[in-house]
Image (cartoon, helix red, strand yellow):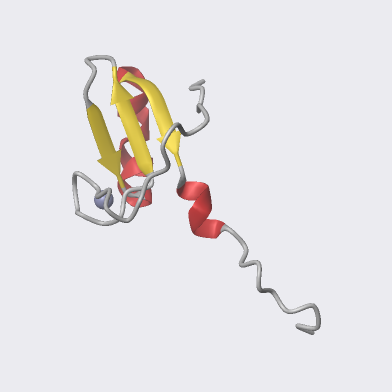
Length: 76
Ligand SMILES: [Zn+2]
């Protein structure tokens, strides 16, 4: 089980996936001291491997499914 720590610095639109260049939603801090950035797709894909080499996984993929605050009260 990997502990997901509270983000120290939120990922921004300037952070890009190391594999495909899409906006990054995961930051992986490696035991070696390096950092990797992944989009939600590649974060999921490499998650099993990343958990072996990461000391911290900053997961902001939850922002992708956040319900808009502008939901209409009478949507029915
Ligand atoms: Zn990607």
